[in-house]
Length: 446
Image (cartoon, rainbow, N blue to C red; front, top):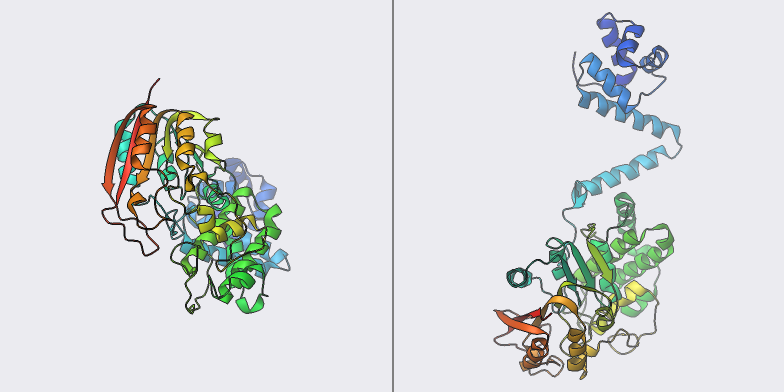
């Protein structure tokens, strides 16, 4: 008898095997602990057995479990679909989910989705993270907790999550917080619910979308108008669905929107201005991020100088902004997308009124840095610093100089300084020759 069976397998195969073996229903019932009446209904197609019952019968009849279970599930699906008037529609949705799953996911994790470094961001430590942690591991000992005080892209914190028992990360930007929740937070989310929404958004045609807040302000400037309409539609729809989504699901979809926007943004890497040339239209596709759950993470969005007074641990990593370029202004569109307050916008760059402005980008930088360092309750302090203070651009000049940082750190303990040649991510015309990244490591005095 062939092991490949058809859709009517469960309605006749058990009966055919039993008769071929010259067994009565009672004999099978005695061996499998399945009642005679239930076996009769299964053999006559009036009852679909449970998975456990199928496995018992397969073992008793010495029939391959995978073959019989596949046919059992197929019969079960068909029976459910036939019972509902919307069965065919449900089957189509299931096919879409499986198709999307096959291209975007590998088992339960994303394979072709956006990884954390896959967006443009000023000061990203993606190319330096290996060197940073090589030095940190060499210079610290018996450390189990790590605090990324100005987490930015989250690249450093992501590496720390695989090295330390507890990791905290903090940033004042709403858009960075939502990205941390999406990529790291250990909370419930339904993968298939998220996939279904992504499929829905990708099927919506821009021609069917009305002009909206986002397209009116940013269309044909930072994005072509069709892309801007679709971004605005997705964001507005997410707001309406927010109560039906978990915090993690909402964050994943918003972070996916940010990463997808970044690929088509008509900019040089930030939103301080847009490129004033004709935008070549490209179809906008919402792609998911590679979301994970980490049980050892804590996420904050607070003023760093206030937060360090409330937590303690082993290693604090400090990488504040050093020049006058405010991150909340550079990434105002992402802040707008996340908060979705639809503020009034001003100027050519279409920015809202200032918010989340950092004192580290002002003449107060040295004093607030000293206040931060003086109030850190950690055994080791690591500080990243680059030498853009030699820049000819006033906006790129560092507000704190290397010697000042070294003096402040030495007041807390023995401090070592390491340097690494590094090509700075420069979106303007400034030429940073002989650019280096510095890493200060301080062992705090008792």
